[in-house]
Length: 220
Image (tube, rainbow, N blue to C red; front, side, top):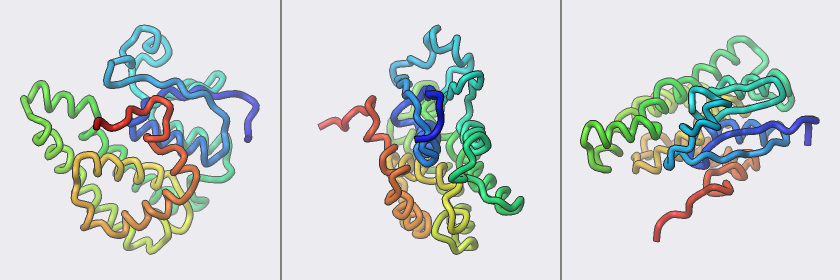
């Protein structure tokens, strides 16, 4: 394992943004302590956590003097401070493409179907679970269609080509979320094939939400 300091990662087992960072830490072999927060129970709003991260979101990484939120920022920080193995390509066009695909998930899909938004749709807009799931699927579909087209153009093993990048760290957790709301994934065969290749890698498989210490087993 690399690194002399033990980082602290605050997260939630089912948080797709937290999963992105877990993959990055595993990919780079970085030792870290995991501090779980239950977003369902509202632990992210506790005063003790607010003193660490006033925004109250997860993931949040503490690494010495660095205290960072926002998963893509954390991943790029890890890539700059521990460049091997890389998560961003070497060329400027390739780096920009990987960032573009990552942001398609992190900026256009995920914010509209994360937990706090779905809670609002349920409580404030009066939707039953079926309506909440339909809302999530509505925003997933166009994003996945764009990613499917980009993957077809790239013609690589992974989303941005033949190397694992930050884009893949966003894709796999979002597919997990899509399945949770019964999204029809048949129109996205390239994405599903890429996911299968990625889930064969330990950094993805061993950081899966169901394998986290705070995971809640499914009912029944």
